[in-house]
Length: 176
Image 1 (cartoon, rainbow, N blue to C red):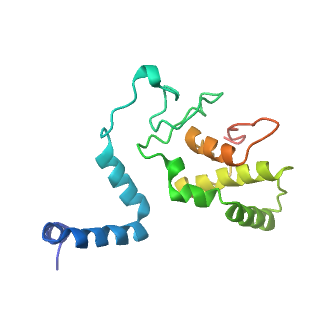
Image 2 (image 1 turned 45 degrees about the vertical axis):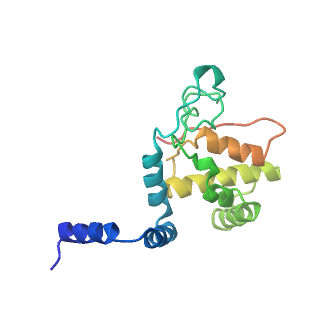
């Protein structure tokens, strides 16, 4: 029976002997099966590849690594995705903020939990998008367990579904 070390060595040999076209095909299959893993591997390979902008041209907060965050009012909200290729620019983020996807998510939540939507369509879409983001990144958290959505993703959502009366921001759990 082949052990883990033997399988890894066989895979290394297969990769070393594969053509560029075969490797591209494997990468595309990997994107379909595990997009997050490939994205993380590519980001690790890119770390440090491009120099950061000079301090004089910096238009993003000091705590931001992805360069797409904006200043936030509270310390817990000053969170960046810390990815060279910002999460807010991934195709998955466009799916999460798609109005039809959000409509279905709100409808399901309303059916299961008997919750009412917020007063305005944009507020309802923003809150649904934040919930969808958390499920995508962390899975179901359960009662009282909350996570802060990174500033870059918060602003991506706010830009798509703006408020005319201001934003509430992150609310820590009431139950500890």
